[in-house]
Amino acid sequence: MKFDTGLMTANLREVPAAAKAAERMGFDALWTAETGHDAFFPLVLAAEHTERIELGTSIAVAFPKSPLVHAMQSWDLQALSNGRFILGLGTQVKAHNERRFGVKWESPGPRLREMIQMIRAAWDCFQNGTRPRFEGKFYNFTLMTPFFSGGPIEHPKIPIYIAGVNEYMCRLAGELCDGFHVHPFHSIEYLRGTILPNLEAGAAKAGRDRRDCKLSTSVFVILGDDERERAGLKGLVKQQLSFYASTPAYKPVLEAHGWGDLQEKLNEMTRRGDWAGMADLIDDEMLDVFATTGTWGDIAGKLRAKYDGLLDRVGFYVPFRDGEKVERWQDVIRAIKA
Image 1 (cartoon, one colour):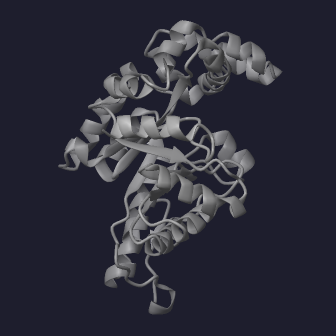
Image 2: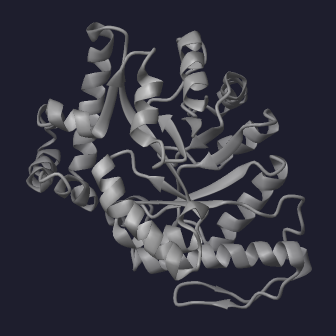
């Protein structure tokens, strides 16, 4: 099992030091997210200032950019990092696409399928001079001249991960992708009952082995050597879980445990802005399902016992910060990767 971390800083000037610290600690990958900032820009700096650690987007929002733009940015990052880049894409939800990014929301699953196919067609064109012949319902790629081609690079095989919760996305990952970002809001039951069977179905459709698609996630941990240390994290985890549980797209995760009615209650509370009240609805039984509680000494063993054989790479939802509990983090890294 690989152990990854996320890039916490939003200040590009701080990226080189943060990336070097993550590599020095022994993390396997450093992931960026597309929240308030672009997911690709920080990885340019991270690639320049590191040598070993993998670098990926978890996730870049797919539809605000064209497939060719994703392909070009990924190609340059792969070349700059000497083959360490992972392109992670996610659809986001309708409201964010239409009301935040200002792009049309249309058949997100089939559209993402075409995007992956066109990105790979572009990479094949860059590397091998293949004539572009991709024509789909949503995207077309039939024009490329040498002047506009990215040209061949030393490491042309770029892994593509996608993120998702529903059955279609799981099948799509199994069929076409190198990895699947399991949403942090998940449970072992949902992994076994929904994600894995659908990944296997998608892989079978393409004549692939399910293990060709690596499973990655960031996990909620309530971590500390005493109750006082854990109390602060417990409140943060309950708040974040309640936010995710309020989202209609994630209702199937709750339904796997008979808690489907909670989604509508939490969604109504978001409209009232009752964020503190939402966290109060996440009880200890739910915390046991959606988070892992432990000390710095036993958290690695608990995560391995929980996820070995299910996930290929994990990270903490609240990632490493340079200078904070460095020795404790080093112990966890060694134990998880042992």
